[in-house]
Amino acid sequence: MSILPTTNNYNPSSMYDGGSRRGKQGPALLRRLFRFPQMDFEFAIWQMCYLLIAPRRVYRNIYYHKQTKNQWSRDDPAFLVLLILFITLSAIVWSVTYDLGIYGAIKTVLSMIFLEFLFVGSLISTATWYMTNKFLTQNINTYAVAQKVEWPYAFDVHCNSFLPVYMILYVVQWFFLPLLLKDSWISMLMGNLMYCIALIWYMVGTFLGFNALPFLVHTELLLYPIALCIALFIASLFGLNISQYVLGHYFSQ
Picture 1 (cartoon, rainbow, N blue to C red):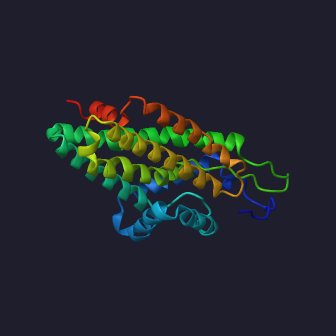
Picture 2 (spheres, one colour):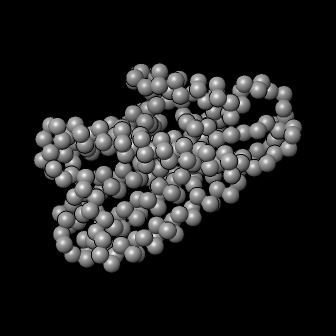
Picture 3 (cartoon, helix red, strand yellow):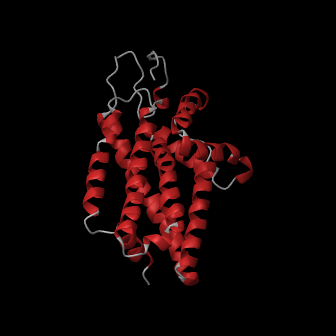
């Protein structure tokens, strides 16, 4: 997608690479985090469904959101709230399955939300935000507004890309648990394949998210780690059951 350059009759404080602009977006989203009646959960569910079946359609709407809201990132935390709710429910189910007790369940919920989803996601978002702004922003002429990737948008991309990871590793893996815990090559193949697909889907989702921004170039570089992921998957079939290793480490008491 391409757009015409914008002339430079603008207020410098409105540029996306300005710290004040990024600072206003974060607190605004946090202020709405507990205002549930104001959240559009129906639209958030629509986004979740299409992120699984047709993610490009979701990212096409981002351009129109930019035209109306003057920002690429979400201003409605409904998607984030729903995703945290789903993660919480899954953590409880996994805790009951492994009979972790109340303390273990609370620990699992906090670990899945704050460590796996928010902390690791923030690190990945910061890395992609820095890399895209540093290396993938196209050079524009002097008379056009310089655009930068917003950190909240990078976190949105993480949330979108995490959804299929959640579906595969938090939901589907649970249903296949009796098979995955068996000591057989088939169980190893199934478990390792789930983790490989989840990682690849996350990388593809990240690529689609940044590829939707018209001022970024060479976003296909974000797909290169897929080759490493496939190579590690093939190597793991020679004796490393990733699913059993992760579950044993995660839920060991």
